[in-house]
Image 1 (cartoon, helix red, strand yellow):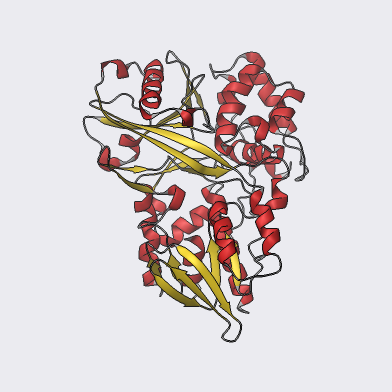
Image 2 (spheres, one colour):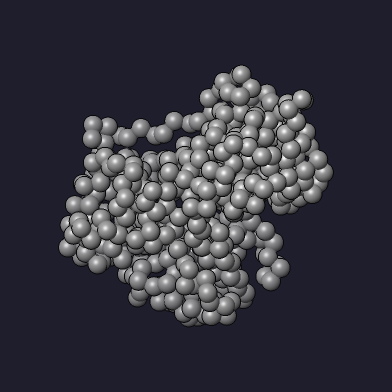
Length: 450
């Protein structure tokens, strides 16, 4: 979507071929038949540092559909709360006062976290073979700091176990969300279902001379040397194009490769794709007959469920007497093995430990969503297997997707960034170089000098 809209705005005649009947992909929403409600396939969030995603939202006119917050409420079983957020102090010290008074961490935990943050101010070699888990153990992190911060907040953000995360990616998350500036760490959440948010692209493209074709999963693509054109075969028919931009998840790209023209480099691309693996995210959606909390969202400590999002508050049109909450379990390979009844029962039992109002509430309906291909892993060395946007082995072809070389982990920002990079590659191939990539946020406060 970000590639198509950027190219259309630049004056190219763009067709966006979408496999589904709605936009959004893994960041989409749909009508769940079991509960007759429109739900997101998982809660997605963005941060102030996501400059390309925000630029894409601005382009399609939906930036006002994002609710922003700068605080994060952590809740212990039993209900005790700690709020992390910025203060008046300059970066990187802006979050220090709230950390020092947080009940969730002992004095030893706080000292360990401050030592780690200080250490991560230093540049790290991108090719580092060290995992986050190894680094934490070598740098004196307490069990409380590991379980209540690193494993929950950082590993959840990267959706993998701490021993499966390359240290440079963890360091990037820390710097972007907690050190560079309060603005960079602000968290945004859509106030409408995700596919409704991305319907902005569906409106934008026709208004810019483009088009969206739904239910058009790509079956194969052929290149004609004589006409210098592509013919793309889909379930919705064949489409001719001068340039082809493949914005596919890595597993879909692997399936398409045998149906692409033979080319030097195709085997090498297949080898890179083979080095990627998925990590799942699960979410439990619960509808109650009454309100159970006034919080918009919360981090839930020491239990299986990790995050609570109060969709009744985040989506204003849902407000009423009852409440709808979504519980998210990141890096959830064990949870993903539970059946529907087991997963919902576990989530409900744990939710009561954080919000006693649940004891009195009546559960009206519930849904379990398992996104088994939610994100790709970021183990040490993975960057060697992330292809560049302009490295496709075929003529007049570019690659996009969160898994290509963007410098970001598996996020909506990486996807939007890859689209802008691929759009630049297409324009360069057309002899009309353009710049679409939005610049990173500059550090503020003392971080400007560190």
